Image 1 (cartoon, rainbow, N blue to C red):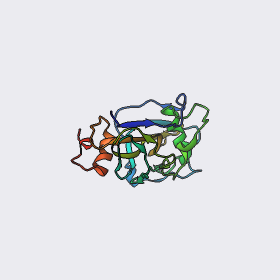
Image 2 (image 1 turned 180 degrees about the horizontal axis):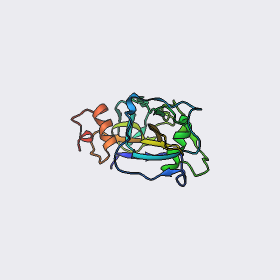
Image 3 (image 1 turned 90 degrees about the vertical axis):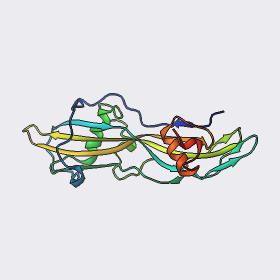
Image 4 (image 1 turned 90 degrees about the horizontal axis):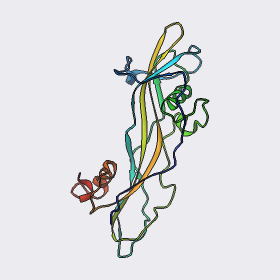
Length: 214
């Protein structure tokens, strides 16, 4: 019986991308976003156009539990998932950029997380938040014996943007948020095709465990 599970939990669901967002293009952003400062409200031109490029949606492991051994017949999982990482909901941009929440709303529209009216922005635009909570629910109950590990992850969204004013002035930057919390349970002696589960297995079961190997 396979125990490597990846349960996609409820995430914010959007509809269509905003009309002011240009399509994804090849190439990279022209500004060095590592040196850019957080976007400052009140200094941007009105009615500018966003162009989003280099949109990526990696999965990031947020935490794992210690190995929990269950005997014949299984039982409830009681170990808590300990946090290893967080998500940075943030915007970095050069002078003249719109407010961070406006930039994240544009990104949300682009990827379909926020509808064209900006409804249901939710956690996607909460600048400074650290991603989904861990251990929001209990670990559940399993009906088989084994050595189990719980893990938590999240689907992150990262992208570069250009904000072009009607007069031609351009501001560039980088934005990051998250869209889908993920939770799962793996069994240390069973292989899994899930890369995130293998990463969790390496940390808790050990690098030589079956679950940690591709």
